[in-house]
Structures are given as structure tokens and as C-alpha cells.
Image (cartoon, rainbow, N blue to C red; front, side, top):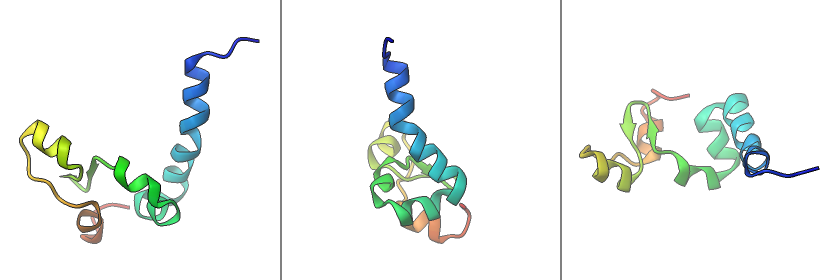
Length: 72
């Protein structure tokens, strides 16, 4: 059996996809704070500083965007 990079990537990311699907963004990052740095956009806000700079938009911290109650 050959293991491809696609297989490896799927196995590495599937638990996070399932957590987001099962618990929403707020619930998933509450259960696994390691997900927080991977949130780039929430509730229509750019929540990653480098992404905001790269697209010329205002940066909004993840917790602030989620606290607005606009994201699940």
C-alpha cells in the first residue's frame, strides 16, 4: 500500500473538520485552543493579522469577532 501526501493531509486535518462541523467555530476552539491561530476569517471579519495586512483590510481579533455573536 502506498501512502500519498493527500492521504496524510486528510488524516491530519479530518479531526479538525469534524470538530468544526460538530461544534461550530466557537465550540471547536473552546475545546481545542490550538485551532484559534488557524481562524483567518470569522463573522465577516479578518481575524489573522498577516491576512488582514495582505488583503488591506482591518484586523479583528478572533475572540472579538466571535463575541459579537455573528459566528457559530
